Image (tube, rainbow, N blue to C red; front, side):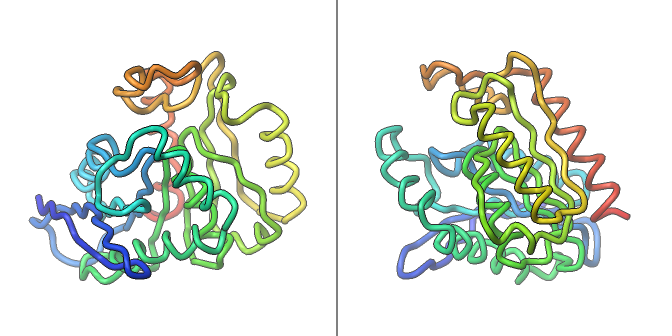
Length: 237
């Protein structure tokens, strides 16, 4: 297994992403860009990239804070604020990571998926909204931002959410559903897990000590399986 941390520049700031692929195989393979949760690039998302690599994918976990490490919770909210209000900045950050991934000889630009956790889910959506040819966009406990550019999404969309996520109230979910319809996105799904909160895929989530933020093993397992089924229909087809 080839595993490597890669430093790259984003508008004068050093980012450090995490690349993984099976180097015992030759040629290009289905390619997945991963975007981390709000606190930053951590072992959770790095581990997901390596897990995908072991399954035959070329995977790169980008960095959208800089430095390739998580930041304190109070600093996280300071950093996320400008991103949440500036979709163009979010798209540029996503594109910078994608450029690193697609520069790898093992990456196949025609079989590309973007997945993200928390705000990383919103970043994955913004790549599609910006016109990137992403065959599958998957969000795990994602931010469901709205955009007039959703009609640019050409791939399949899967958002996996807990009904008790304090960051995505029901009205936000309903507004997102309406936008997908109005924008003419042809293949989108929201998968809901009853009684489940935010960060349900991250075993370390409980340590945050925040109400409504907790790991949920069954939802983690089920959402991962749903993602793999979508990959089989799109980038593995």
